[in-house]
Length: 249
Image (tube, rainbow, N blue to C red; front, side):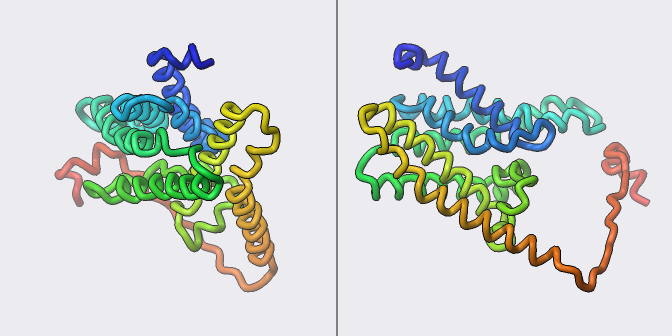
């Protein structure tokens, strides 16, 4: 495995695969479990490389992710060349996961247990900070934030009522980094059979608590009582008319 990863092209290929896994976690393909694994795979691809190589590895993964997950842009009926907008937007957004990989690629797995846990939390906080940035910078693009991939996990996403989608993203990255740290410990210390459990203990505990709390919230809301039913219908206006000033009326 080490000889295989010594080939930088193989790392780029694995990074692209991780990006496609991340895209597959969102609606369309909808394998939400990939969101918990793909960030760790992406980070592992950059382990031991220089900062510039780590950035490029992260960029390849991010570009693959956005090219697949933003493919719906090609179906917008606009004049011109929508493929250029699709590629340009994907190329811009890929900078953010690349920055995360560059910042964190050799930070996870070293030090004592307490220090490693702090690294996991910092890594999750950096990811959320980048999501907040991409959601606001240059008018913002708040689509495909990582937490949105868990839209079917109703008990888990109840935490969003307090933290917004960023809290779900934080939990995903926290556990993903813990899995990465646990795998790193297993590879570096194969003789220590029980050493890896300590890496995942805190995020798994938080996941269990939040999931249980979400179950309770859903149960409380399911109780019968006064209800108001409302229906929202989005206007179906062709995009070509939206941009035509002669159709303003």
